[in-house]
Image 1 (cartoon, rainbow, N blue to C red):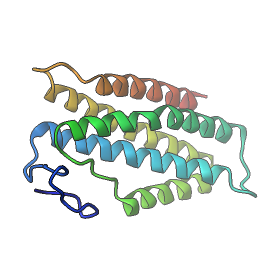
Image 2: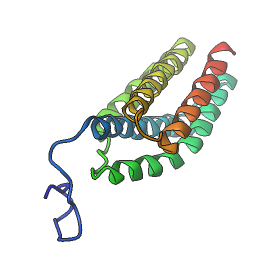
Image 3: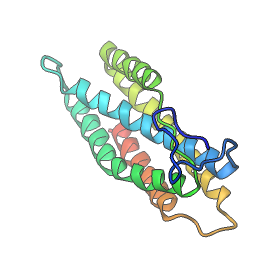
Length: 171
């Protein structure tokens, strides 16, 4: 039996295999990326809300876009986690140090100037596209089976998120 380090094996718990199949691998990577993106967005929203932080109209629009995307994204984590567990695997958590470092980098970019804020937004758009591509890879792993609705909902969410963030870039 293989269990996460936080869980002790029991007779009715943790019958996961040590070797992951392609579905498990891609779903775990997707879950990790999705979880990390929520952490980074949450950090950026908190940064924009700090007392003394001078927030321009453009920043308010970006902050609201991040908040809207985050609100729609967080409920999608649990179904994805359930799908991973259904495949007899445990979801991999995102690396908090990596997420923290990415959020810090984004904060520094936004402090520099208006161009920095635009760079933060552009980088977030790139990361959203990476998430969409990973979602599509996961869908390909299920092409011989019924497509899990969690993946379909996630793809739709990511397409909407990308469009929402693009409108911030254009304004």
